[in-house]
Image 1 (cartoon, rainbow, N blue to C red):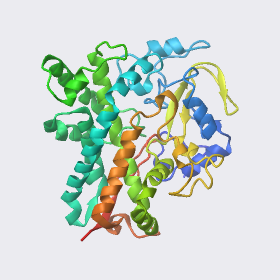
Image 2: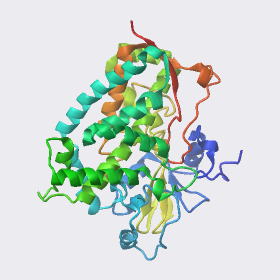
Image 3: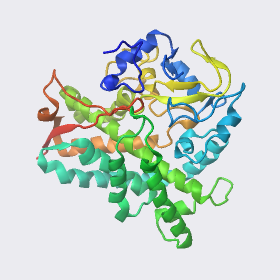
Image 4: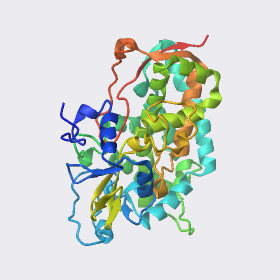
Amino acid sequence: MQSFEEIDFFSDNSLTYDPQPYFEYLRSKGPAVRLPQRGVVAVTGYDEGLAIFRNEERYSSYNAAYGPNPLPFEPVGDDITDQIASNRGDRSTFNMISTYDPPDHTRLRLLLKGLLTPKRLLENEQFMWRLADGMIDEFIGQGSMEFISGFAGPFATLVVADLLGVPEEDHKKFRRIFTEAGMRLGSIDGVPPQESNPLTRITGHFYEYIEDRRKNPRKDVMTDLALTKYPDGSLASVDDIVNLSAFLFAAGQETTVRVMAAMLMFLCEDPALQARLRAERSLIPNFIEETLRMEGTVKTGFRLNKVQTEIGGVELDPGTPLMLVISAMNRDPAKFESPHEFRPDRSNAREHLAFGRGIHACIGAPLARAELKVTLERMFDQTSDIRFDEAKHGPAGSRKLDYVPSYQARGLAELHIVHDAKA
């Protein structure tokens, strides 16, 4: 294995299983360190990362979905704000709400908030409980299953489909789109071709939905979506509604699914913890937060420095790509005591950065938390025990777990479990 000094984090799969030793190596160099590859500065300090999340004046989200790849333009001057604005083109990589800066981000964020109303989220959570019961009924008698494909993936797809009012007859089609695309976030194989992007395919469907509902309104969620208005009362553009809807659908897949699997992994690994949570359901919310801290799906995020500045003792020229090592920030010993220990009752677990902070903090966080809680509650309601399928993952002490090959996403590729149904 190469030394940490030589390794290219963005293309080497050797760190996929456990990146924490590498992240600790980076931390030993300081809260921010310039990597020898690609001109990227990695930030591992919690306070430094929080400062970047909260300062959109200095740090652009332009490359949030683009990662460490070479910019499609050559940064020139002391302030590249205008260059960023003029180099988005028509690629979805640079035209999602997660990559926009104010004022475009502000306008779309307010529109998105109008889509995710408290009433709609409550209705959606009620749907989650019914959906979870129905899905668990399908496999509970089998005694074993692959959890990600058998429950977590379809559950997350149908929850977001219900939230956005996607016609039920298209639910299977949407799930197939994501299944065929596979994991894309931060693939170590490089930037996937635009034509294989599931976001592009889903966008086409949403154009059809929105245009149809504007011509032929119905009493359904999709019509409400089509008639969404900006805060000033004007009708939102079709493009904005379509892009936000497709983004919400895509963003709600990978992230929640992997955290669901991480929750069950911790419970399979620690039978005493599982028994405690079953007996003390009030611990579930904090258990979820600790899971997000330890195994949040987005292990690295990206920003682009717009002006000359400094972070963690490192001078940054305009156009410097910053890698926010969220997995390392969430294990910063200056913030979290014994950071590599899983503590379900950790008092400050909710201060993790798994959902980001600042203007780009995940607006779907309440939705994700509800999905995770419903999943765990219903699994506990209908099973008396959940454990690893050792035929697939091996026995304790020589456990075999595979993770998605990504420099940006953290998550199990598969999780095979054995479960005992309650009598």
